[in-house]
Image 1 (tube, rainbow, N blue to C red):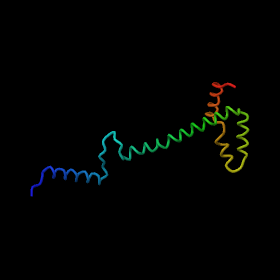
Image 2: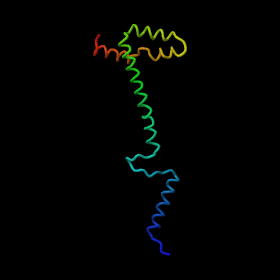
Image 3: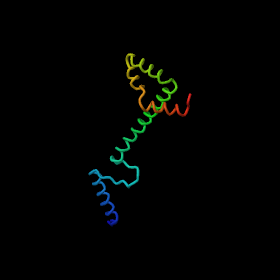
Image 4: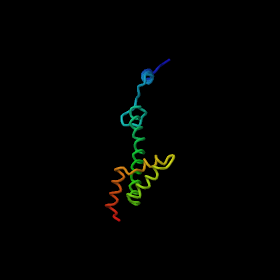
Length: 115
């Protein structure tokens, strides 16, 4: 029986690749979308960080807008009343307290939209 020498070469290459895969080596070209764990760990952190940063920015912006529209005294009295409540009300008061970022957003709105 006649055997193609290229076929023997092919099977030896496949055997080497299978052995390498068994050892955990990969064959991914640079710049392709692969399954390497090292690339995924950084992406996983970014995928989690982006929505958290967006939610934080929206929350601070919303607090700043509320602070601007109701005024500083009314805002603080409402947060104080919330802190005196029961259950989750003190948690809400802690979240809604006027932090420096909230005051900055409110001040920027005051300079752009004076009453």
